Image (cartoon, rainbow, N blue to C red):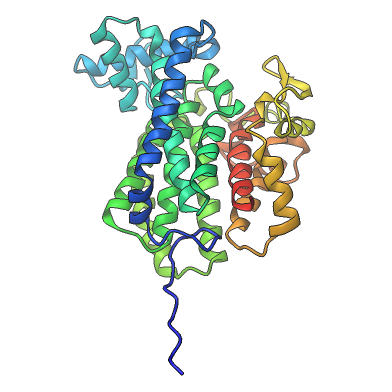
Length: 401
């Protein structure tokens, strides 16, 4: 009898038998579909911007504070000045790390330059950034889901569902940072998985550090730390639950050190800014736990018209948590069929539960224990974790379908 042929070992992290054998094959196989995903999302945003009078990402905090300071600082860069100090406020106040991205974020600076060049009012900056960033995020989610061996069709649905979810769309209208931060977030996870699979090439580590620089240069410490928690949690769980060699974990120290260096301009000013604000010693329990996600808002996964108790920014609509019908279907299949037999699902299941707990604020189990952590204790409105709830539960659902 002839010897049995050994099946080739696959390096893909996905749970299914058709896992892609390498990141290179994924890129070649999916480049056209990924391009179509980005183009379709761009056209949707552009059409809404052109014909829907309600399409406006320059409202509330954006209109009152973020847009003016971003435009002012971007024009300083474009005129050849380094914006370290804002001379328009308090006889000079530090700019870097104060919660806006006009000082360091290249796309914002280029966006203002483009609008000025075309003679278009800079008040449209946030609309332009939304139109350009959301497609980038959609392509990132598509690549991430395909790398996890989700089928092409479900990866397309997932990409649109996450970047088009209510929490990102609604929050970006108020805070200009949300869309850009969560457009680079999937690229960080995608590159982290590639590195953990042994593809710790100079190219991948450089791209990882580049995506991190763009996240850090947006200069919103709160959202940045939330992303760090998500990335670190997934990274550690993937390494240890999948039994990956320690070598790959050590290799991540290279981009991790780049991350720390690139984020230094943002974080170095944060203690000073907190010291000069009313959050220097943290905030009261009332403010720390203010605006949680009501538990019944999670039923928004089932319907975008679900009305939950406790309004957030004047809305009680399940649209805030709705991200398509795949979530309830996938979670049911996860509990009934998959369970924890597939170890690939475990990191995303744990991340989903953690961020659900965090989003519930004082009603959570773990989140109240974090109140004493320096800097973290200065953040408010736990409902902001809903973006991570949406993305992690949707990934878990798609892996289970």
